[in-house]
Length: 245
Image (cartoon, rainbow, N blue to C red; front, side, top):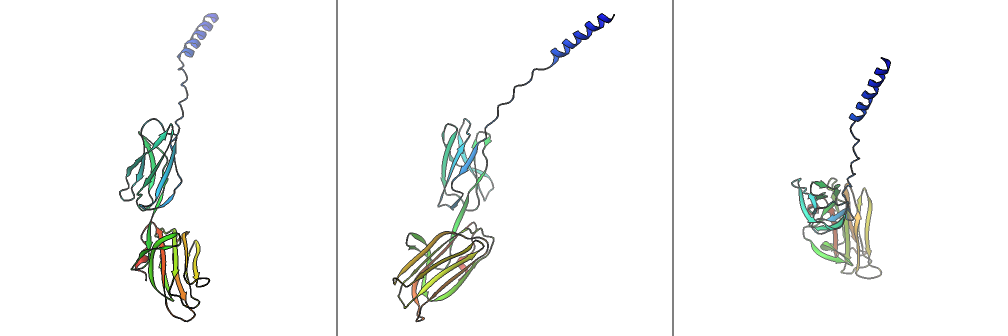
């Protein structure tokens, strides 16, 4: 009787072993699509946003933009690819903080933000003027005098361009523009020495938060002189400085 039980137990063990399912092979790891940009901040409609992408699967790769007005993804351009890598450059980016991604079939990359700024100048009458190598919207007028402008916080202003050019020579004249914000002070200054007409400019300087602008000029004989002043801000929304005179 004992021998019979042993044989039955062994047979049951063999059946149980044969019933175990085969172990599944590990699933192949899917390589992510990775998008990057070398231009995280540009001027709206004027700058170029450049991208590189890696990990592309087979299929047509397209760059998409999250439209800041409709909040929908729209196709911007086709990706030029070489194997699993590619690149793409776009212009005419709408103002605001657009987001980009690359889509291949049903797969998409990580999201990359590119800020696009509008450029705003002060003054009721503005005209493009060149300050050395810098060209910006400018106001012509007579100096000396003092003017103060303010840009409130909340408009996403992050860069400023400042230019000065003085003419109509008077004794020992001087002028400066001070732009003060949480990022520090931008000081553009010119003086009559060593020449009667001097030009100064400072482009792409950082600003943030609330901004205070002081435009100051003077002469030793208190006589006005002709000059140009350029002051333009790169912001995500219009701060309305054109009305602050």
